[in-house]
Length: 177
Length: 112
Image 1 (cartoon, rainbow over the protein chains, first blue to last red):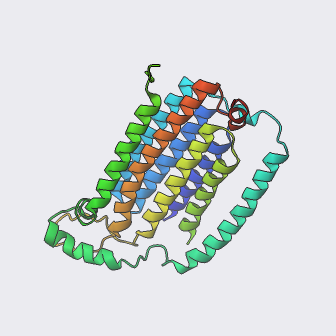
Image 2: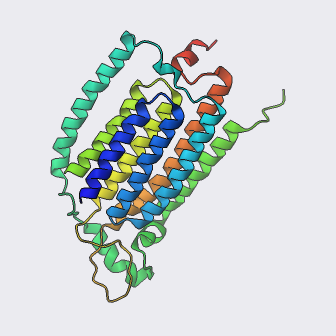
């Protein structure tokens, strides 16, 4: 599992670069690095369906980011002016929050089952019934399209709503006065 | 526990971008990072050591599979994340067209 740790370190480093770099195009490309390392980590954790979807979504995300940045500006001007009291205050509040979040998450992660040993109480039922009742070779497809079909219907609704939202915000013709 | 901690750190980077950055594109990037870290966390929770992807290659195969439920939930969440990012960036584009800046401080000042 050494590859997993290397990819996690790469994605954390690329995440920090994406947040801190001055050029927004470089920032979008660093976000792409994070997304594709996440896709490779999905393959390493035996989730090929997720890896396929993640690659498609990541390509679209980077294309949308680059499109918006090319239409506007690619320099982050907010990093040029000097830090004032308010910036230090927000950074300090974030540092406090981050320390507490990390401590509580370490406490909470101790209660989770060990990495590589899931409980799989419901999943064992799905894996037994999945093939006999649904006749699907891919168990993930059986879960999203049959056992939890309403969940996928909700997903389609959210996607449709977001497409309507984007089209409404970006339309050229406004209301005629 | 170490892979889980990596996800938590990625999550904190995303929250840092949302809370302290003043550029709208950086805030959208923070949202993307949050989304990736949560998806990755779910994939890690379902991972089983020395198990196969939950796809039957032949019928007589032993059922030594990773957990399919977190994968199904994440599959939904990834696609919804794309919708959220597109909506955020279209709002950012409109704000830039009106105020000619991505700085949220300037946007606040220019309001009549």
